[in-house]
Amino acid sequence: MNAPLPEHIRKALETVTLDDKYSLDYGRAFMSGVQALVKLPMLQRQRDALAGRNTAGFISGYRGSPWAATTRRCGRPAST
Image (cartoon, rainbow, N blue to C red; front, side, top):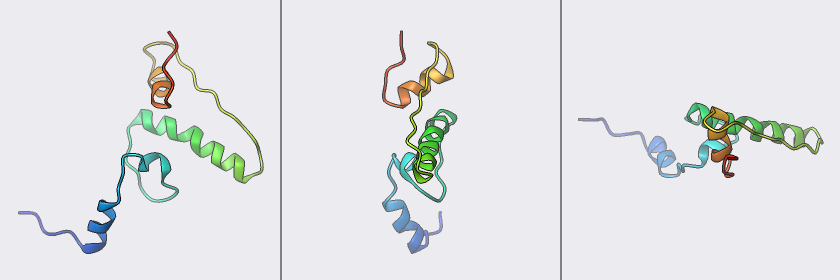
């Protein structure tokens, strides 16, 4: 039998969403390697904006590469 969770942990778990790995500004977020690769350009863009830089990023990969999976994860289909 599992021990009951403390109240603060139970409340935190009630508010968790699948998008937290991309939207959390602090704390832990559990993610796969591809999800971490997606998060890196998002963090860099955020850092650049805080530094007053207007930058953009480009992610590309050949079909079957891990970067192709990253491109799909970013919301755009991998090029054929």
